Amino acid sequence: MTLEQLRIFVAVAERQHVTRAAVDLGLTQSTVSAAVRALEERHDVRLFDRVGRRVVLTEAGRLFLDEARAVLARVDLAVRRLGATADHVAGPLRIRASRTIAAHWLPERLVAFRARHPQVEFRLTIGNTASVARAVEEGDVEIGLVEGAIEAPSATRLRVGHDRLVLVAAPGHPLAGRRDLAAADLAGLDWVLREAGSGTRSELAAALARRGVALDRLQVALELPSNEAILEAVGFGGGVAALSSLVADPAIASGRLVALASTLAERDFHLLRHAHRTPSRVAEAFHAALRPGDQSAEPIRFQ
Image 1: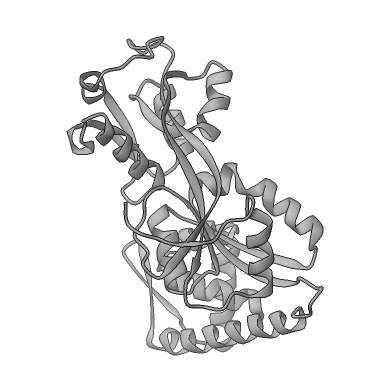
Image 2: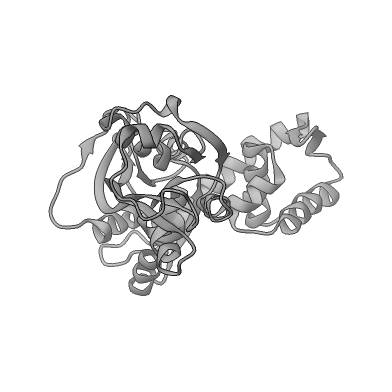
């Protein structure tokens, strides 16, 4: 039995889904399935039952989950203690980031930090803003990175970056070339939106509200779970969308999309930490590396 098998088992158990666990762990579905199968065959026990599209724990699986979590927690603690010297940053760092940040803003910073601290092991998972805040509050990760308004009473936040929210459409859209869209124009468009709980969607709702347009007044043609899916749908004429400038600008520069409004809103990226948990040395160092100047963390309040 290996620690990797334990991590895979816990991920599948928590998500009740092999594919979602594979995505969050950055592994292939076949690798995840093989790890679970190896555990079951080695110990002659069934850990999961398949119910519809989900997998659910058997009684043996439920008992094993508690022990697997305990082992992984002890391993994390042991690694932290090995690296807990005044001048040595090493060990695991659990991060959960929103999809936009994880795909377009964070990788450069992870590479730079690990170049300075090569013994750091990043464990990155990806979700929408609401799931990131929940993971921080429940102690599943030490650091969350989000954009958008959130409600997380047990977390503090620090501004670490920013981007713009851009309204985009296919080049052949009837409003292509216009930059002075009125509220009535916005309400009359077919929209391609991110799912509820995403930071992009919450920031769009706030930007529209400032223009006197409620999100529930929009004509929603499609609701999709990723920026990449939205880019494809908009490019094929599925409607307009509000996207991060980090996502939209390359598509606009290539002529794949056009901007109907250069900036719907300016928005900040925030680092989240639990307000009442002591951070590891690695988390402190990563926090400091992302800090843009001297600023203190503030409690998160719903906006």
